[in-house]
Length: 405
Image (cartoon, rainbow, N blue to C red; front, side, top):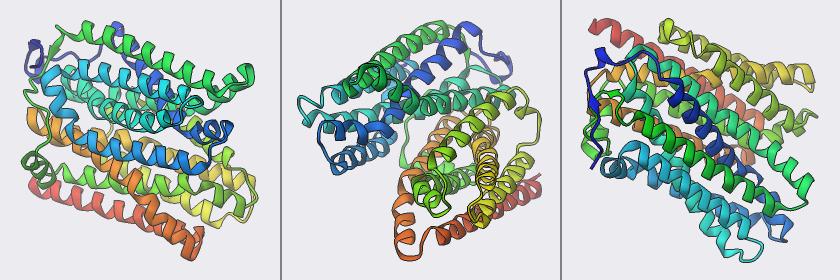
């Protein structure tokens, strides 16, 4: 069962997370995100031990399946052990995955075990980490800390490949890369455990159960929470399509895909940390509308670009601005819609993340079919249509909310 805590009403919650909690929590999040980002380096690591990209694809695929499946049961585990303890165990699971990858040169079979371990650990952490924020601060402060959390995660993922390459250059070994990442997971687990102990007696709202059931998911989808849930799923499709096939796009314009990922990561990390203190002060529906316009502008610039590096950077920056802040903005909208009801808030947050996972991992297959049949430019057109669809969903949400009021 979940440990006893100082349960209060939402009005009595503090409007900030103490530094002795927020600092280790965010640093632990960075550590785990770095390790998750190591999956982008897996193809090179397996090639170094004379294994083909097929094995890397199989490992990543098993990890993806494990991510989706474990997302459905993360809440059930948290009901038994507590949210923070479950997050700490997820960090330990990710450390096991890194050890498996580090041991792959001796026994390739361990790489196949590492994929599911990584998927389970990351999905449980990604699903449950926002609940720690929702439980312990006032509603108006939640969007700030959700933005800081997403910024920490993006920072870690962005650091993964450059850090891995630096370790390889210094050590000449891919084993050393995953050994370092395993250590990062253990450090992250210790930081999260430290934060959890500091939070143990902190004021929090009651979330008696966080497990997902068919009934609770149906309730979240039928409520107004469905609008940000749908929008984040569509947004994830757009991001997945653009990032997965970015190498093809860059080659068609005579550019380097590394430019896209570098500009995107730096822009998103900077913006999330920069706007976190102020984003909650604005009407989030208006912010979401502005971000949709920026996302569309970025895609349009990339579509019109005939080979200009300046257009490539500008289009990437605009897309990063639009998409990069949309996750925390839509998450904030969800929090305000779900309100203070313990079941709807916890469940809606997890359904929101699950929708993101479905779009992120599901759309690349559809995008691949489009690219193979019609080319990347047609995929860009489809993604712009998806952005317009998000605008329509937002308009319906605003109209529905206005009418109810």
